[in-house]
Image: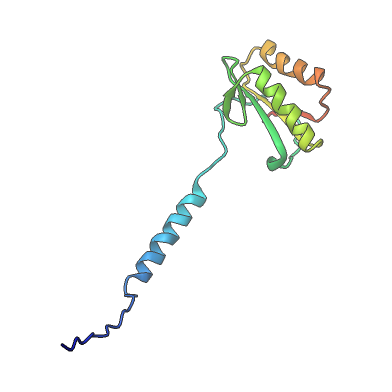
Length: 130
């Protein structure tokens, strides 16, 4: 018995490759528009002069109207903030800590954060205003 094998030529259909490339392009463009930085809605106090800093090297402590503390956009407490500041200082001593508080926040809440930074003897602190 003779068995003949047929040799098939396989080919990859390239007709839809342009569609796939277009969908990938749209997907990449959509991801580039997503803002990964989480911000808390607050009213900034006013300032007379401004100084810009490098956002990537900052540690941001947000305080909303109710006095809730946020560390880089996530709800936190004073102890966690203290540990994060210590870790940031150990990694990069010139890391700037930004304290961003709502205009209507009680000063006692802001003062608690500033006292913690003072106890840690952290010297690169900014109060962020508009």
